[in-house]
Image (cartoon, rainbow, N blue to C red; front, side, top):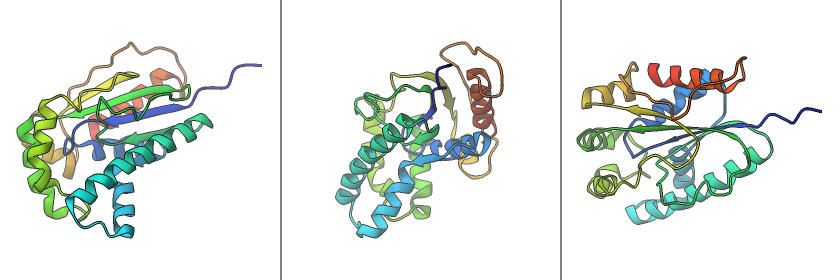
Length: 208
């Protein structure tokens, strides 16, 4: 009896305002996989709990990361393939002790000046549970410290917005220019092979 196929876990990571949500949505559309998105969970819980200040927002964000880690381990452990998206920090043990899975990390980033412009631009468009403008300086310091470098797990696809116009295009109208690199060669064949999944995810990142 052949061993059951391992589920696929796609982790979309990187600093705030880099375009992760757009990329993750495009991957969901291209692959048909369910998406667990940090900001969506935070907004639902924040609205229900009446979060109304930056300190409570930060506490809620920490709780949501823990919730994502629990959901990912539970679902992957029961054979469910999925996408998890958020500004997962390198030092945070969110994905420690993961069940066995085929894992692809999509790391989305941009220069500091692009992140700052994006945070300032989208402040009025965001759910009030987020405090992008107020947190911008702190986020840039953490970005400079390397907190949102690629996570030390899985094959990796790098997506990089090179300037502010590209970042705006990625987040609003599609067609962003990106640079990509897989950390290991594609292999296998068939519609559910690692090669096929990676090609689908790469295509989604290119056209988001």
